[in-house]
Structures are given as C-alpha cells and as structure tokens.
Image (tube, rainbow, N blue to C red; front, side):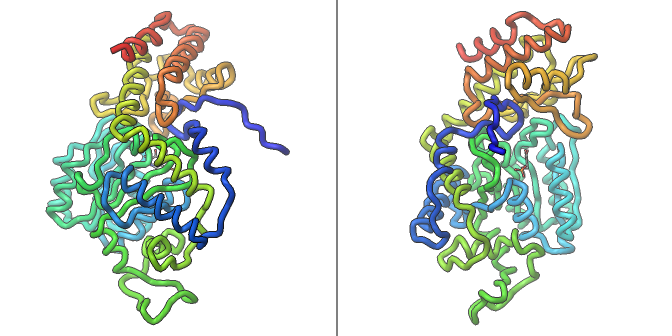
Length: 402
Ligand SMILES: Cc1ncc(COP(=O)(O)O)c(C=O)c1O
C-alpha cells in the first residue's frame, strides 16, 4: 500500500505540521556515520542547539528517539538507586518524571499543585532545603494543563544546595523564553514536534559541565570497544541505549561507536534549529506569544471559557473548557472531517473536559489561528452551542491589529 496521508492542519498540542524546509532537509542523501561530512554535520548541529538552548555547554547533542527518550536518558544517567529526587508535579508530564525517577531507583519527593496551576517556586525551594536531593526534575511547559512553570528561582536554589536541575522543555523550547545558562539549568531536553517545527524522533539535549562530569563519573565503555584508558568508574548507568556517558563519547572527539546516528532525523533537527535561529529566538518567542494571545482572545470571543491560570499559560497551547452538554470528541471529529483541522483533548481528569488548541512552530501564524477559530465556530453552532457569530475571528484579529 502506498501511504498517501491527507493534508491536515495540526492545531493540537503537538505534533504539528513540520516546516517544509525541514521535510526537504530530511530527503537529502544519506552518508555514513563516521564520514567526515556527517561528523561535521554533528558538530554543526551541536553548535546550532547551543544557540537554541542559550548555552555555552560543550555537551549539547541529540538523543535519538522521541522527547521521552531524552527525559529517560537524563534521569537514568543522573540518578543512582537510593538517590533523592524532588519533582514538582502540576500535570501529566510531572507524573512521568516521577515514574522514570522511581524506575531508576530514586526516592522521589513530590511538590504538587492542582492541574491548571504551577508550583510556587518557594515550595520547591523549601523541599530542596528539607530533602537535600541529588536532582530536581521539573517540566517547563506541561502540555497536559498548558501551564508554564517559572524556573529561574528553582535554578538558584539548586545551585545553592548542590542539587542538579533537570528540565523537560519538550513543549516550550523555541516558543517560550528559556535561558539554560542564565537560569542555572543543568540538563535540558526537548523534542522537535512542538515549537521547533519538525517531526518527532530526535531529542535535542544539553548538559552543564557539572552534569556532564556527574555522568562521566559513571562511565562504563562497552566490552568490545573498551581500551586500557577506559577504566569503568562509578555506579553503572542502568540503561545501555540511553546511557549519556556513552552517548557523550559518541558525540565527542573519540566518536566511540554507540548507536548509528539517525541521519535523516539529524538533518531535520539541524534544519529546525536553522529555521529558528534565522528568525531569531526573541522574534520566534514573540510570534508564539502573539499567536497564543490571539487564540486565547478568539476562544473567549466565541464565548468559551479557558481552563487554568492564564497568567502562567504556555504561549503555544490553550486549554478550552468544553461547554456543558457538548461531547468533546464529537467536536474534534467534526473539525477533522469537515475542515481537516486537528485539535486535541487532554489526559486523565481533563479528558473530555478541555480541548487543547496549539499554535506552534510553523502553525503559530495568523491564517492558521483565524481558520481554526472560524471552523470551531461553525462546528459548535452546528451542535447547537450558542457562540457569538464572528466573535472568535474578530477577537483574534484585534490582537493582531494591536
Ligand atoms: C511536556 C512534554 N514532555 C514530554 C513529552 C513526550 O514527548 P514524546 O512523545 O516526543 O516522547 C511531551 C509530549 O507531548 C510533552 O508535551
């Protein structure tokens, strides 16, 4: 069977439509993984992502896999069984960090906030002082609730108490302010399929020198590659594929073989970063801010309620309360069938209670926002919901006009 996917406008919480430049880059010819051309591309990609992460970290690379692979690589490579880890939890992806840290053998202390709010950084600081963790692991933008956690204060308290700080920026990087070095973030990981405008399958990752040294202190080079200079040290990292010590050796000057770098995904990641940096990080964040503000105004202009503390909302996704009596999935199905527009629902307690509408990557643009609002109005009216005629598009246009 020939795969012939239909054209869709992907306005959910990610994945979104990939930038055509990224798709073109992915169709470039393959080269061998140790071809100097390829290793040159790897070096160039590292340099581009130092720009995207706003860091001078030498240890900046791609983990091959979806964003979750990099999350797991970071946690499993930093945490030894018995270590204490503090996790602020304000949505589904905080729970994921707890789950991964526990599987890595950590004793996890959570600091929880209700879904729709962020965690007060002061509470995280108190937890750090009380538990003296090896690691604080936190989500920046939790797409399950659309909340964006303030990070700078957490970075400062971690540095003060010698805890490492890991940040999942899968859904926020490129569309929201994120300053790896200035905020004192030790490890930050991402994915391509949100604000970076690519497909899922490659996970940009950066490690501070402190985090890199902590990982290297657990370096166990595989049998068959090991030489006399590769004396095993520290507690072995409990994953082979996601062992950042070996991945660092593969991306470092020795190019010690680990996996076979996913060439086409590297081309994609490279192009995502180029597109973003050509626009300029500040301008890209501002474009996401405006598109998100227009979508927020638009859904309110239709007379719909927005879920959660909008003061802490991510720029790139808005959670819209499903009006009473409306079947959330029926609206999503009509948006897809009649307009070829995908919007999302959420997980767990929010499933069927909210729609999540994303404006990110190439889709953080005016026509995508206005088309989605016009379609949503039409679908809701068809289901008998009293929406303000033209109210969504008008309100969004007003944001753009301002
Ligand atoms: C905040 C956050 N973390 C992690 C993930 C997992 O990413 P992936 O599906 O690429 O593994 C997602 C995906 O939606 C996400 O939004």
